[in-house]
Amino acid sequence: MLNSEHHVFSIHDEMTIYTAADMREQLLLELDKEGSMKIDLLAITEFDTSGYQLLLACKREAIARDKPIEISNPSSVVSEVLDLYKDQSLISQL
Image (cartoon, rainbow, N blue to C red):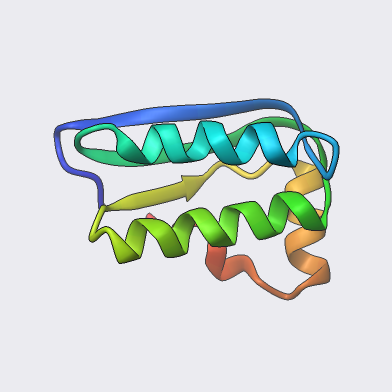
């Protein structure tokens, strides 16, 4: 669960191989901020294995930093990829 000092990072449009490098940098900058972090995936329109790997890496990095993180609101395209990998555990259950 997120504490009272959290920030939300909403990802829009795509999270694919074509945006992976830039998205990685954005996610790391967000992790550097104080407080807990919520990643909102509702506005993602394209999502592939690279996006999935980025979310996994971000979650691992947050755990390594002992930083609370919540990944939520998967769009239908995100849910499709998570179903393909049989990994709904990536999405935080509230």
